[in-house]
Length: 286
Ligand code: AMP
Image (cartoon, rainbow, N blue to C red):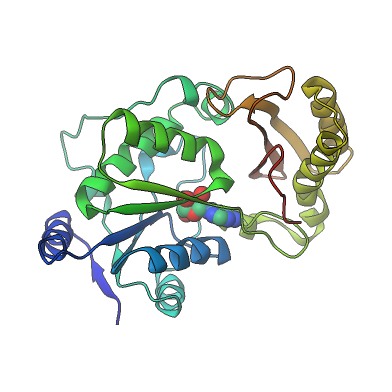
């Protein structure tokens, strides 16, 4: 039986009592509408602690005014069943007034690593993400938290926040879970019309091609990016937000692929904004 907790006070009391009993807590923050990628994070959390808490909260402060906050897919009953199937103990499911009561005015801003990529195309997004995660960590009091590499820049910002603010928890990163054809799983894939599927696959396919070039010794970021852009735009319905190669330490653009670099893509397919990435030299399971 999963316990559903909706208030800050009850969640904190629950976690505090577990901690007093010497029990460990793993935490997976999500916006719900689960897919196998979310479940893989939960399975990892299940292995790493006595108690597994998952939050479902579509956080308004990380959405821009023209974004999909209102139409973001939600299905609590389905999520509840899926969470139960992987052994989740608690779903933390707060309301907006519980998270942002009147007079709320405190935000956490991670600087350099959030400037580029989604930081450019979604102003204010990471400020919302780091703020809500900081709050959730204070509410759930986990020993370990699990994030997906699918949102690579988000993971980088969370790692920075945890280190910079001396938060006493371990951040675990999980590889991107993909459909059999290579499409990175995302709650937003539900927006894609069937005729757009092939176009959506241009993201993972261009990452695969970039990895092949890297494996052959090619280190020229500009030319790898150009090939990816041309390939993506050769598909109907596509509009590129960005295709970039960045140093993972700073998330600044790299001209040559040296040290540890990530290729990150954000592409609109119809009205759906998809992201994907791959770290050079790491296997891309396609
Ligand atoms: P979301 O509900 O989309 O905010 O995602 C919640 C968590 O699931 C984040 O840590 C994401 O990075 C992670 N996640 C989303 N999609 C995937 C995926 N395809 N594979 C692995 N993790 C994912």
